[in-house]
Length: 151
Image 1 (cartoon, rainbow, N blue to C red):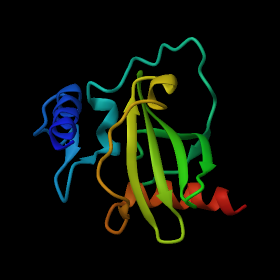
Image 2: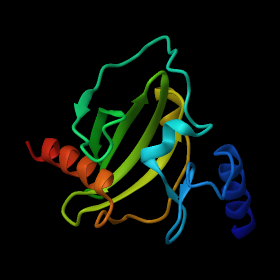
Image 3: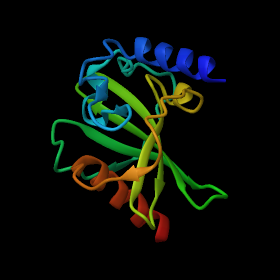
């Protein structure tokens, strides 16, 4: 099982570009997907999709260069929330599938892609759910998504 996991991680890092680049993966415990710079990586696309869904704009003062939208969110049987996000900066667009534990203020990314369709099946697991403490963008995204969850 470990060789399969290692192979998948290597393929994922190769797909994200330079594994040592902070554009694709942030430093820290485990591999964190850097949501702030996702549109600057090979994961992002040019935004030319046949069916572009409109989302709800998420205020992100910590990243004024990008526009973040919540496209979809749902509760899981485990009590966490899965949210599909779109980041746009200029003509570049990237999608992220995230999982949040609103009660414990935990967050992680479980998929990234260049289109809304692909993000549903992509795997970019950036480690276990972990605190958003000290991560302003993840805190802003979490607060918005969790507030909508409880409304």
